[in-house]
Image (cartoon, rainbow, N blue to C red; front, side, top):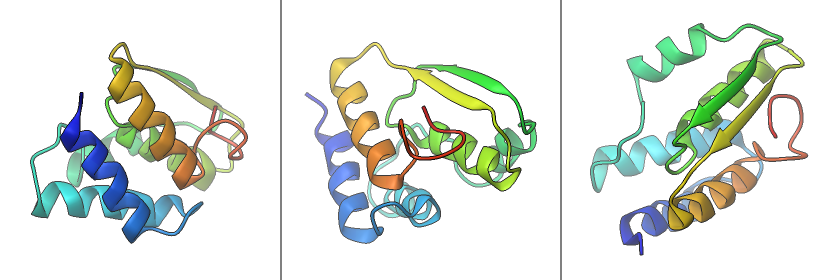
Length: 117
């Protein structure tokens, strides 16, 4: 069971428009800043991560947690108008479920355009 992670998902769905990756990232950062600590790379760390992405990178992330870093990577791929991909893995079934929902809500999952997948 992952009550905090499910709370993030509920907060996201209440505070970000479906398919809006920017609003989704902001909602997760807002939750992390005002509710409970989350192990996500927000602020300067997410900018550092995004700055490492090149347009055609194929990125594999191990330990997606709730999918926040994946959203940052997919957003950067789209900003660069690249044809790369972000593939992410999570061993914990509850976290994987939440991450799939977060990515789908934000438009960053499979079929969500370049970068997703």
